[in-house]
Image 1: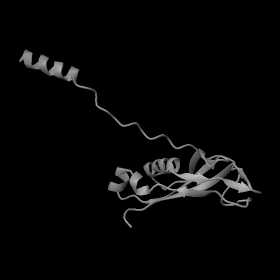
Image 2: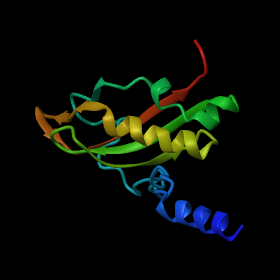
Image 3: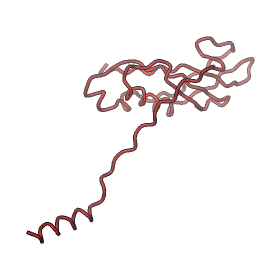
Length: 135
């Protein structure tokens, strides 16, 4: 009996610890003062998305299993080069995991910068990410 217990303890001590995935980063608060908001642009060319990843790839499994849907509005700040430098929830979908997954989509999207009088400027844009199961 003692040998069985010692053997079980030895095997348990040699087993690697379980691997847990890293948690999603906590959503950051929205910037307090947008620089040049897309919903009220003053320039001759608004920022545009040139590539937006498919949201279904990023659908959180728990939200999918519970059939949660909604739209996350993110307020994102873009540099003069069209690089995303800050992002916060402008309006929540009502589900924290859908909002967090929207950050992953925004980080992988590609943008063109806003132009005012032909010059690229830093801008704040509202990016809607719509969460819908199926078509």
